[in-house]
Structures are given as C-alpha cells and as structure tokens.
Length: 188
Image (cartoon, rainbow, N blue to C red; front, side, top):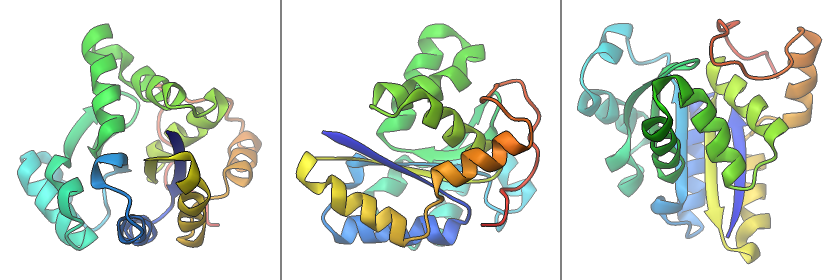
C-alpha cells in the first residue's frame, strides 16, 4: 500500500477530491479526513456533540457514505477542535492514548510518518491543518497511486513545496503543538 496525501485550503475542494476518489473506486476505509473547524459550522455547533458536528459536516460533504460514519469532533493539542475520521485518525488517537494527551500533535506527525510521509512534509501538513486547512490521506495499492495523486491535484490540492516556502518565509520552522495559530491559510 502507498499513502497519497494532500492539503486543501477549502472544504469544497477537499469534498470534490473525496467524492472523486470514491467514484474512482477508492474505499471509504482507505480515506482519512482531518479538518480544522469548518467556517460554515457555527462556533456554538462545535461545542455540541460529535453526532451533530458529524451530521452537519456530512451535509456539507454531500453524504460521502461510509466515511462519514466515523467523522466527529476531536480536540487535539496544537490543533484545537478538528473534524476527523478514517484510519489516520485512529492511528493518531492510538498514539495519544499510549503516550498521553500532550503527545497528540506528535501522534499526527507520527501517524503521517508511519504511513510513509516524510517527516518534513508531515510538519507542513500539520501546520496547514492548524491554519484552517483540510488534509485528505488515502491508502492505495501501488498501481492506483498515480491516479489518486492526480485526483488530489486536480481538486486544487495545495502545492506542498510552495506552502513550505510561504511558511518558512514567515519564520516558521516546524509544527509545534504549543504554538499559536497564525490564522487562515495564505491565498494560493
């Protein structure tokens, strides 16, 4: 299995990618979704129960099938409340449970690197989530990896190297779970 990952600045682009992946035959169980709190869900709703948040995000994503069954609100130190679901979240939360709550951000970095993502890229992805982005991570067979990468690119996934340069230009070096968010993603 290979891992193909992309960061999105908008929920619309992430939803487009998610639907296209599913239409291409990628199973929901092989797709993970981690998003900072969607702008179209009111702050009060984020304080509510996971079922409400999952249902509202499900409506936003247009009923993406089995993936939505696992979506819920999770508070992760360094990221705050995120909407997440899928195999990557389960891996990250397993790391949190095993290492204690303070290691949650490391759990995301560790989960990404454990899935084959280079550590330097994992830090950019985590920072992108902190700044309001959406991360889609897909496990595919080797022969599907090019197709999955193309789907994510065509859905307006962020160019990771460009984003890294922007972050470094701001003085950012790596994801730190106790850093304060610098706001929304830069305009692409």
